[in-house]
Image 1 (cartoon, rainbow over the protein chains, first blue to last red):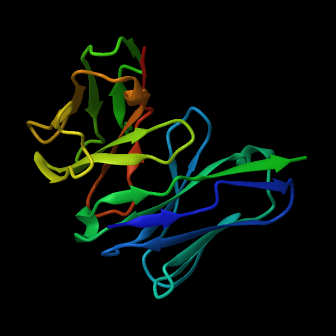
Image 2: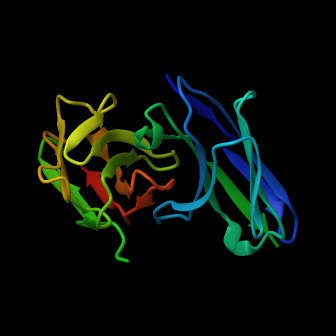
Length: 112
Length: 113
C-alpha cells in the first residue's frame, strides 16, 4: 500500500520562506512530484525528484531523501499569489507507468 | 500544444441518476488517469490506463463506476447510479509515459442532490 502525509494547513508572511514537508511509505518508488493547486483550478506541476538531493527552480526548490521517505518543498520570497494548496504525489512501482498517488494537500495562506 | 480537455465543466444530477464524463488527453500521451477530488482533499486515483489497457483500477467502486478508453485516446467515466457522496471534482490527467509529470484537465464538478 501507499501512504503519503503532509500538514493540512500552513500560514506564512509575504516575502518570507516556507517549507512544506511530505513523508511517504510506499511498496515501490519511481519519483516524487509536487503540484500547486489554486482554489477551483486543476493541479499544475511544480517539481520532480527521483534521486536524493535538492532540485531548484526559481523561487521553488524540492528535496528528496529516499532512505527516509521524506521530501520537502521550499518556497522563497513568498508572494500573495502563492496562496494555494500544495500536493505531494508519489509514483508507485511500474517505472514511468506506475500509478500516481497524491497526499491530501497542504493549504498555504500567505499574509501581507 | 493543446492541453487535456474535459467535458462537461459542471453537472448537477439527482441521486440514483447516471452521468458520464469525457476526457481527451494530450496528443500522443499513452497514460491516462481519472481522479476524484472531494473538496478540501487531495486527488484520489480511480483508474489508470496505458493506451487502451487498465493498469490500476483498485480504488474504482466497480459496482457503480465504469471507465473505458476504447481506441487508446479519448476516455469516458460513468457513474450509475449516483450517490450523494459522489459529489466531487473529477479530474482527468495524461502523461507521455516517458516524461515525468502528468498534465491535468480543468475537471468536471459533479453535484449530486
